[in-house]
Length: 200
Image (cartoon, rainbow, N blue to C red; front, side):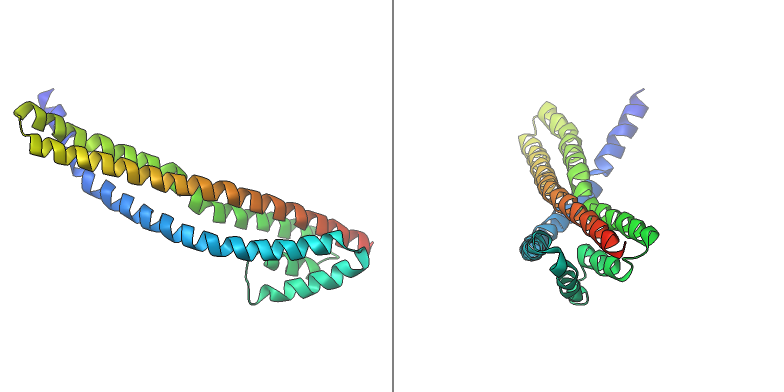
């Protein structure tokens, strides 16, 4: 039994370096996500204002306004503009419209996956980084080595904080992006129906 316990102890200690490395990588990814998130926020707000104005305007101006808006597709390759452009091209084909809307949802889920991974994996790595140094810290306490115990406790607390920060960034960006994509999906379905009615 002692052999098994020692083996598990060495395995868990060996995982500390990979856990810390992955935590740092996830933290860097979270900071990059925050930077891109603010740029995307202002871009989407401007685009959403224009789209809302078109949808609330007269039906006669809807298609021409959407064509002008979707012309930005080359400069701004967001899933919304790509799908909007394709809807205008294939407005008479019901099967194509369904396929485009389904593909938009797939693109949205792919984009949400980045935030979702941070929200789920960050706490796991933080918890692992907390528990792994606790073993050596308790050994140091039993041996009277307070310096070793203090160092291991410092590592444990630092990994917890980094893991929770990464998770917080993931959760916040995930919530906001889910609202973005839900609204855009609703707008695209409305536009697809309007274009279908116009063709009919």
